[in-house]
Image (cartoon, rainbow, N blue to C red; front, side):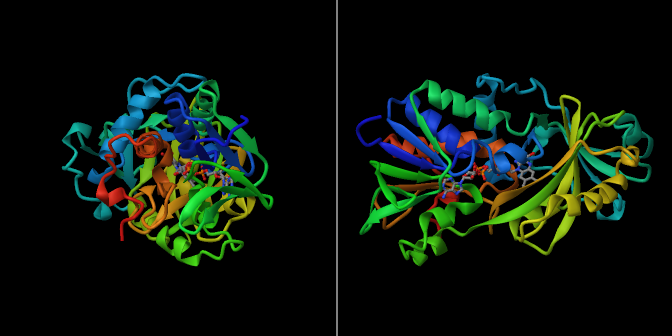
Length: 367
Ligand SMILES: Cc1cc2nc3c(=O)[nH]c(=O)nc-3n(C[C@H](O)[C@H](O)[C@H](O)COP(=O)(O)OP(=O)(O)OC[C@H]3O[C@@H](n4cnc5c(N)ncnc54)[C@H](O)[C@@H]3O)c2cc1C
């Protein structure tokens, strides 16, 4: 690419790759800057489920993302039908109220023999809401497929060094990589939990920008196993919303997602980057309360990654007020695979000067 690109995208996760694909397919010249590898962050290491977000503010992003995934291909395969989500608890007294605002998910209360029949892998004495959602996918498949699609449309990927926003006054001039200026017409920052850092590198001394995009890492450890009798459903202990919204005290909540015979069992919620090997026994011990068949099964692997968490649980999308040529696409917390492509499409439209439909509640400039 000889002339400066129209857009520099910082971050090669699900959001950055899908954003690059939408921009390049519209005819724009795009360079993606990724410091490590495509899907090096949570977009390659997540639990691997596309599921209803159970939040009215995010339903449209979910539904549109499912549409994008249905035609994505390039090694990505969206199961045609949901396998079902069980929101499960071992303290039936604390079972969450029926999620009645989503009748389309056909919430069904299951306990005792009915729960055992629906999901034989579960322990006795549990209770669950069954919801008609949950499509398991291999963790890195979506980001890799969008990266392929972006390349096919002419986007260029520069991998191996961090990039930081470069400004001249209030106007973006491109990015800085290893001290070198790379010009671009506008910059989109999709650096996941590190979005604030990419905006606000100490070189620039732009602390107020960081304050305006309060996205922080909330780390999770996931253990991968091949279970002789893997669960049929996506399983999730109740209470995840409270933990993922406010970066709370270190904790662990059970979840299990099985894609292509491999179960991803999680997960922790910590502010500090964890040592995955040290946390794996605790994750498995907690999970055994729900899946007794886990006991004694040797893990295939363990991984850690960071959720890009915002205080209200909603992403930050679109232009940053007061700056010219700077947009953000990040902050999807625990649901970036589920919501990322539709968020990217909204930000792509805004960058391309098409009518912007970013809901005010999700706008990057919200207070
Ligand atoms: C344990 C766990 C399980 C999860 N399970 C699910 C799930 O089942 N379903 C679901 O929908 N979501 C899930 N999520 C959430 C989901 O994985 C994330 O929301 C999503 O991957 C975030 O995508 P992203 O593109 O915003 O960020 P990331 O995937 O973090 O990508 C950002 C990229 O930017 C790069 N980068 C950072 N700074 C710079 C820089 N300065 N210059 C260049 N590159 C930079 C990083 O290397 C990284 O590759 C899970 C998260 C965790 C932690």
